[in-house]
Length: 156
Image (cartoon, rainbow, N blue to C red; front, side, top):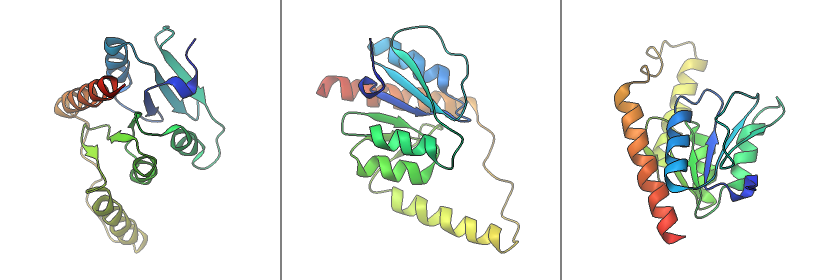
């Protein structure tokens, strides 16, 4: 029986649009996937697929994912600050849109996030938010996760 710690793929699952893709890759490679969220949701029944529901406290899901992040793990999140924590722990990190977070790119992403928060806080109109999730994003994510998990399995 797989435990939460055994999962190779860790998914920050609140509002994650690529749950099915994460499951597909996990089953293809025969590795565990753990979905961490503030509330439960339906998942395919398979011993490789697990869910961990945390309390509703601020950043509880992020804290749990960050605790499990380590070299050899692949984390899926759109949260830039969680991505930074997981990179520092040695995990590979992929955004929901398939763009990887790396040690070379995370600083710029954090800075851009801070600028946007400051602009919003000052009352400035800052665009219309993130673009809608597209088929290209889904495809890019599937390809990026497949590559990252394949690499982790080969390092094994």
